[in-house]
View 1 (spheres, rainbow, N blue to C red):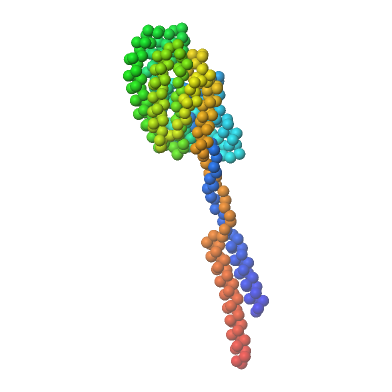
View 2 (view 1 turned 90 degrees about the vertical axis):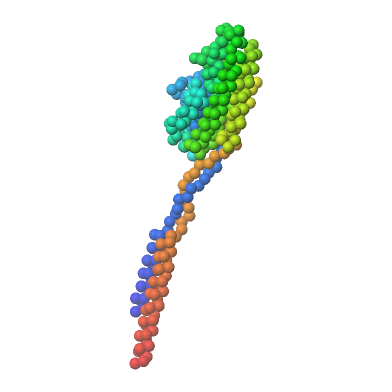
Length: 332
């Protein structure tokens, strides 16, 4: 009889042990990792962000020139290779105005890219002024087709007459830019949880000392455009002050010597450095799912306690029965 009782107890304990082992679990947890640069980055705006004027640039392929988006993408791909990887998308359009950018955002065409971006970098505003100033620039030798100046074609008297009439038109353009920028920031922030950055516009005409009125006019209007960018930044985006770093060296960092207002490879490297600094000051994260420590589930605990209870019953009930049997024998 005792052997049977012990065998029963052993069977119960073995069953409980096996059941408990099968009722453990390890949960997946979100683990946040801190990094300095964004895993996914989106560039928007005009010809500056597109890389116009650089070797390898094509309106149909923005990824083959040494533009600042491509410089940063190459840098971050290496930096994040052992982390989360890096992805860069450039949706800049040469000649794009703030009104056109706002229209593009509101069309919904960028929604998926915006929602999937950790950082959105914008270069916009130059063409708002250029569209209004083309007549003036034509009189000082500017060709909108090439984006370049030809001093041989300067119409000094025509330019002088145009300055006064263009002032109010430029101011209207700036007012339009101010309104558009406000709506651009709101539209982008409603579509992304990423950080948003807006570049200031450098003054490409600061070195045109042969036409002081043109240089002064450009400085005033571009200065006002940059003031608008800074004034609207609070709570909406981070300002990347490209204009401050270009000041005094546009002949070195742009193609203005070749009558082209766009940044050269040195200018793009400088912009890349400015954006890189701003991104690292922000800081970013990415999330992975990892298994935690093994633990016993509720079912496991129920099985263990149930098994213990069964073991107690298996031990006590036979003992009681044996005790009663012995007692009966004594009574006889």
